[in-house]
Amino acid sequence: MPLLEVLIIFSSLSFLGYGIAYFTTTHMKSEFIRFGLGKFGNLTAILEIVGAIGLLVGLFHNSILLISSGGLALLMFLGVGVRLKIKDGLLASSPALFYCGLNLYIFIESIKIFLD
Image 1 (cartoon, rainbow, N blue to C red):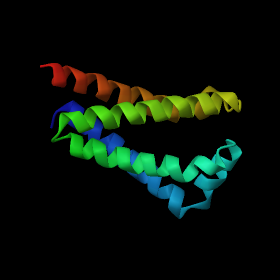
Image 2: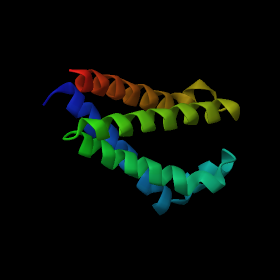
Image 3: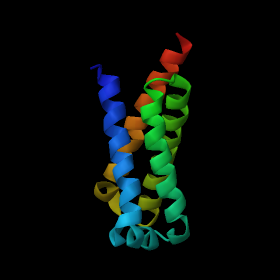
C-alpha cells in the first residue's frame, strides 16, 4: 500500500475517532468550553466526521480528497491558533499542528495528482 494511502487512512480514522468522541464523551465537550468555543463543538465534530469520510471517498475520487484534506488542514490550523490564543503552549498544540501538517501534505499530494 502506498504511503499516501496509509496516511489518508490514518488521518481519516483519527478524525472519525475525534468527531465521534465529541458526541460520546464529556471530556471533548468540556475542552471546547475551555477553548471558549462551546457553541462550535457540534459543528467542529461534524466537520471532522465529514472530512474523515471525505478522505476515504477521496481514495477513489481525487477532487473529494482535495476538498477534504484542505478543509481538515484549515480546521487544524485554526485549532493551533485557538490553542496558542488560550496559551496552551506548543506541547498541547502539537496534535493539532501534526494533523494540520499531515492533511496539508495530503492536500499538496492530491494537487499533484490532480495536475497530472
